[in-house]
Length: 254
Ligand SMILES: [Ca+2]
Image 1 (cartoon, rainbow, N blue to C red):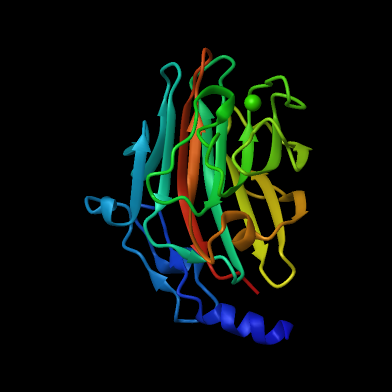
Image 2: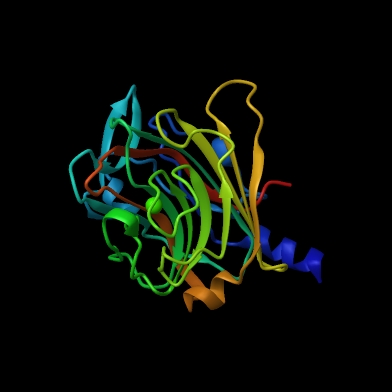
């Protein structure tokens, strides 16, 4: 059963997104040739990302296209979703780099979501991390500001139902989430209904660490067998610029 599910995963028409300017499909090659490649983020980016609130695509980090979720002003919220839905009953893996910067200290952080609310979904600012209120969602937050329910100002969490006041699982980050770029990788095993979240610094030879290992049924929690994936972020009375780049979504690596 497991092997057949994995084989079907290879046929998944999952989006293979890349936000590299000089994109090459090999950056996140899927298990076989059936995964579709979306055009790189460029002049035609609107075809592959739905942007809401303060989210914008810029090219501020060298020649890379960057998804800027908040730009450093107060009380902002932004979201960006792949316009191609992915099958949440199949395994997938996503990785991205994030650079949260420009404040001292900065707030509030970002979240990766799978959601069933649609490409216009956008939640509350501040401690809402841009996803508060997106009830049909599973969020993995990278939170840099300690609100009352939060364990620290440098934690990850799995949050269900768009309620950031209630963490299903939390982990202190092993690296600073603010001030230095980091890379995150999320791996969803649909058969086991298990989500793993890894982080590592963006530097050569850095070691990836598993921070969250949580059983969750994405299709059930989003109410969608085919749902949207993407990012939210916010600022409040403390601000930051919060950027995503090199985002890929595909079938899990072997
Ligand atoms: Ca917070």
